[in-house]
Length: 441
Image 1 (tube, rainbow, N blue to C red):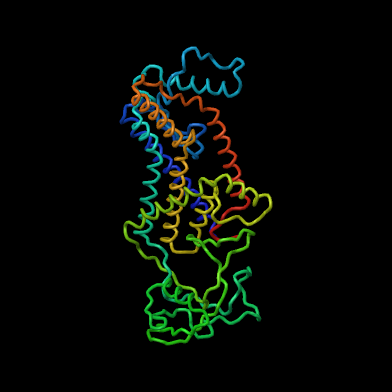
Image 2 (image 1 turned 45 degrees about the vertical axis):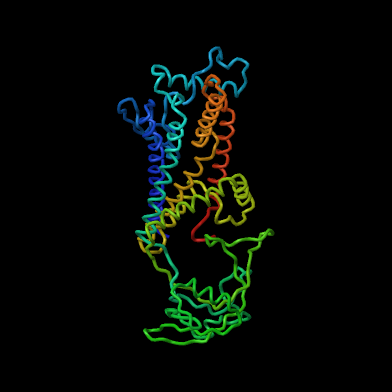
């Protein structure tokens, strides 16, 4: 592993994350200005300001910690109710937080009460809040399209790259043969690396998946292989043996039983591995991959607390961490470093990095849609509730209701923020002491 390349990969991930955040906030900024909302700040990152410049009424800047960003819009919430008091005398911790949130919001309203967020029609508020996540989705679609249609996808071919000398049970965690292991059928039949499979039992095969399917459903059945070797056809008789194989999911990750053991199945096995080559995909393959990724990440988001707990257990016990466990930006940086320093062609490394960055943007898209403040989905939920109240009033010919005062949800927001900080801390610790690695443990 080249240290310099590894560091470059991490730095590229930091830059990629900063660009993703900048586009996310731009997705909020553009419609906000289009609908006339006064925007005081557009900031990338948190903490001390490294650089800023004011253009018109908006200050644009970069802060020291590139783990997020924000725009400051006037009047995110309605002004404080009259006679609400300062909330600090005997009001309790959460009451003080509510009043502080209202006071900060009131400062953004002062001077121009017509250009505020909370007075916009419901659909405009939803467009503004969805603008950020949608930008992440669009970026992911573009990146996946570049990877799939520009660089291509590593695809198993019908050319044999390796021939196993023996059959090792899937339940045994080893890679070397023992004297007691049976000889692999492919080796016994004379298959060699470099052979290209042309047909099996008279059925022409054009992909390794086709060949694998025939082999797996034909245990203990002699098959006639026609392979091309050094430009000449060679006929071999191969009898797949019945063997255990680990069951994998769509991502190629081994599935486990309830007791933690690897789930296996009995299939025909001959002991060959395919060569891979990059094959460009149709232009729609990238967007399709992005949408599939959205569905997968969406399923994981709702399991996040459980997944984080399981990850924390591996940190304490030293157990093996699941390949599909959640990770922090630290973990993403490690993977980017591994991709950049991998012993593969540069084009493969670029494609791998772009895929990783695209997946990160899918995670940002899905995560920000969770309907909890302070996430964008929480603001969308507030706007929808306001719309429901107004529609209900119109339906029954009642006076328009007051705007929804989301500052009342500050205590809930506080709990969500604390939970996010705790989960983020656990994942960062796990990524430091027990990281998910492309190279395996």
